[in-house]
Amino acid sequence: MPFGLVSAWSKRRRSKSQDHTDPWIYKPLEIWQLEDQATRPTKRQHGSSVYTLKEMEEATGSFSENNLLGKGGFGRVYRGTLRSGEVVAIKKMDLPAIKEAEGEREFRVEVDILSRLDHPNLVSLIGYCADGKHRFLVYEYMHNGNLQDHLNGIGQRKMDWPQRLKVALGAARGLAYLHSSSAVGIPIVHRDFKSTNVLLNANLEAKISDFGLAKLMPEGQETHVTARVLGTFGYFDPEYTSTGKLTLQSDVYAFGVVLLELLTGRRAVDLNQGPNDQNLVLQVRNILNDRKRLRKVIDPEMARNSYTIESIAMFANLASRCIRVDSSERPSMAECVKELQVIIYTNSKGLAMVMHSLRMI
Image (cartoon, rainbow, N blue to C red; front, side):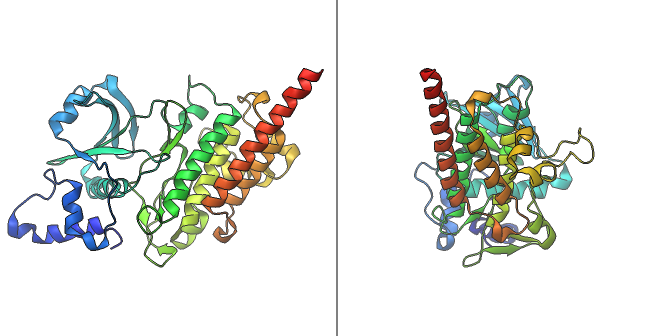
């Protein structure tokens, strides 16, 4: 199995009948590592803390609705304050019996992967709780919620173009780090990259979250074949959907969809629209390289004096290449990082020239 941690758990399950112990009673990550050192890289220095159910209750005010930040596919997320005084986000796994096994797997995968990673554009895992059947993940608190809320949320302050470019670059750097192999020795595919999984801190810097579906690619291979396609509708790589072949380029496709959301201010899938306008990719794919028609899809809520048409066109061209049906024609995330840096420079230079011209009048 590609996950050493999952393998170790499987071994413990087989021996459970012999020792009658629960492998999930506050077993810190260091113990998991000792059981599978041969396949496990060095864990990042500061590690992850282990919490009790009582501590989670105290932190959230017994899961008060006043501390509820949002709801996801596998439970609720609360704002919490630890005994140390640190403010955190606490994800409480809450699943029907039919999905418990799936939720358990995602919980373990996320703890395993995030405990290995350390990058400014990935959300930090502070700790976890596995008390009896209770499962919690404790993350750093992101003051500005998720990207989708800022693009379509009611009452959220709209982002100008430089802010959107900054978010795109931060997310690209996070994915490039996952794909680079530098973190764990082999590449990681996020598999569920989307605008709700791009969180924003107090400075509107992007951090990628939710690694429950992440996949460590088999060593020496760039493709993983699966009979079960996982992810979120609207962000699915069409090649992955049709063939079951998961690659790093599957994340690139999803990144391209998020670029379109940043450009247009629209959702990847909006069921409130007519049948022909529900899927953002299908709606704009054919106009991304047509400057005249492109102007019509720019988010009207975005301040006109915050962008240049040249930078918009470059951004749209990058998005169009990320969402190509043939994955071999898509850029790598490292290439996306470089192009976005050029786009940011082009936009700032263009705006500076406009301001200079106005001062000369």
